[in-house]
Image (tube, rainbow, N blue to C red; front, side):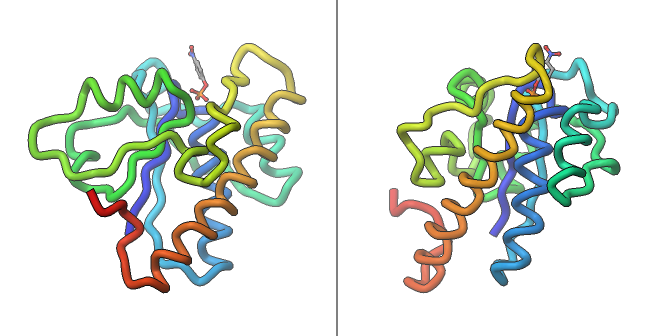
Length: 163
Ligand code: 4NP
């Protein structure tokens, strides 16, 4: 199974989600490939935002090797799940979906069973506290994914819905 976390710039939210997911999926014994990207291309090739790197490091995650990349058409076939950090990202994902794309698209927090939490707020124009709040929310979300996907794995599914 594979999952691509998607935000706008791929320097704040989705890299944090990916680094948390890699660590926690591994600890949970789930063999799930993880990557992240942005719908925008402004930051392609750049490292994560220094504030994201800082709050990640304080919590024991190493984000230093991340380099931003933009969503591409192949992602719709390469990944089982495309998980959007907010409703704008999800709308963009759906708009750009190529014919024949097979990936399931969802809001990250919906897939995590935290539907009422809605979107992961964009911390880019905020402060360090906003990045810390994103990290905490992303950790809860990843734990929700682990719970949901462990259940479908036990039931013999791929983690996708039956549709
Ligand atoms: P992200 O945050 O989507 O969580 O990576 C943002 C990063 C950059 C911009 C917006 C959001 N930007 O406008 O450049």
